Length: 60
Image (cartoon, rainbow, N blue to C red):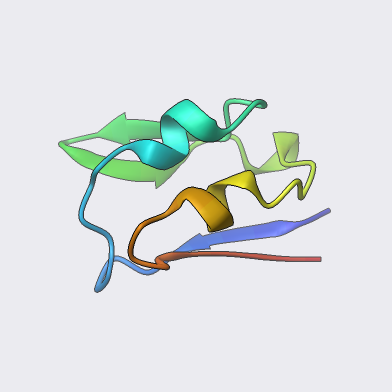
């Protein structure tokens, strides 16, 4: 199962990952993006490519 991580030191909470992810891995909590359903990740890497600040890593 892929491991999804957000570097909150880089994340600007633009929510691009939420709208890009076809599996609904990301959500929003308290104004910040969070990994809410990591088990749904299919490692398509769409979020990694879409993040404007490189705050997301997906490793298998």
